[in-house]
Image (cartoon, rainbow, N blue to C red; front, side):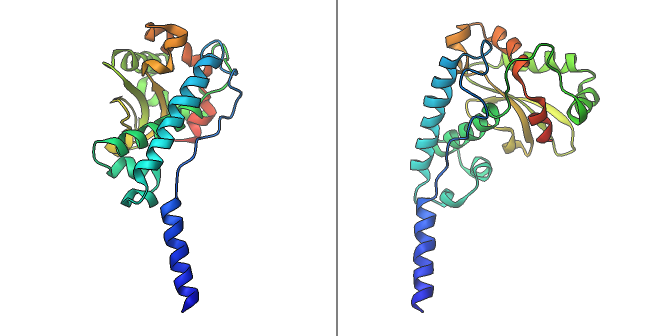
Length: 210
C-alpha cells in the first residue's frame, strides 16, 4: 500500500514539475551570417525565445496543460497567455531547426521538391507565393508552408503566435516576420530579409517533416 501511495505522490510531483526546454541549435550562432547575424540569433533565440519558454512554464504550472504536448496546448488553449507563448515556442522550434549555413542557388530536392512542383507548378512560383504571403502579412506574425488534411502543400499567414496546427495542418516550414527576427540586420526592409532567407533553408530538414 505504501508503495502505491509513494508512486502516486511521485506522479503528482512529476506532473507539477513538467516543463518545456529550449530547442538546441544545430549550428553555431554565427553560422547563418550574413543572412542572419550572430547578434540577431543571440537576441532572437537567446532572449526572445527563452522568454517564451520561461513564461509558458510559469503559466502552465498546476494547470491542465502541464501534462500536454506542445502541439496539443496550441490546439486546445484559448486565446491568451498560454496560447501565445506555446504558439511562439512551437513556431520558433520549427524556425530555428530548419536552417543551415548559406548556400548559393539553394533549392529543394527529392520528395519535397516533387511536392512543391506538384502543388505550386515550380519552385520559383512557390518562392513568389510564399514571399508575397510573408511580405504582406500586416503587423507581427508568420508565413507557413504546411500539409493540409488532403496531403496538399498550402501557404498560410498566421498572426502573432498562431500556428497552422489549429487549422488541422502540419507545418513544415515557417518564416518569422516579427520585427525582432530581422530588424537588427535589415531595419524595415522585410522583403530583403525574406529574399535572403532562401539561401539558408535546410531543405533536407523541411522534407523530413512531410
